[in-house]
Length: 113
Length: 152
Image (cartoon, rainbow over all chains, first blue to last red; front, side, top):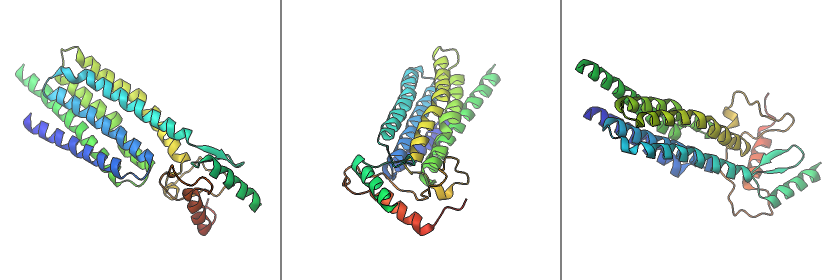
């Protein structure tokens, strides 16, 4: 069981570190949301591996909380970014622009026609 | 009896190792893949299959205790919530142009007459000057005009 625990914790730790790299370097907010989601799943998996290998049932309620937290966090951040979308023009294509910039873009588009 | 116990322990260890390996592949894919949708594709591997494998392995090791059912509850909950969050994140990613459209083979959400932009940009900065069209949109339109109409 020692070899199994070394291997499992090693792979989980490497995966968590790579997810942290993406969390730090991600060019956009959504990359960071995806990386956070994956990181929380890896943390939950690590808790479950600990509970299984040590036969230690005390961390299992923490596991439920972590998996709930991952869902609530990613959905609320996605809703927040979706609220930043503005509709402009008549093609109703969404662009992530502030309000004044969207109005000015629509005006230049009308001037071009 | 002891042979059966050993076999069960080996099965649980194999399940735990498979789940941990899926977590490693998720990290690798998150670092290596080019845009949000492909990163989600890599990142949701441990979200369903990895969590299922690890929860079943831990439940085998914790058999006889009442918390083993709580582990299976976590697995069922992941199966319910992973599609919801993935749907919302990918929808926002498509609308905010975080998708490399030049890498897409099929783009069913493409609007007909509008030339879609095929470039990948980061976020619009929150303190950008409000009077001008955003850097992201201006630059992507410039590149699209250079590229010409989208081959369909």
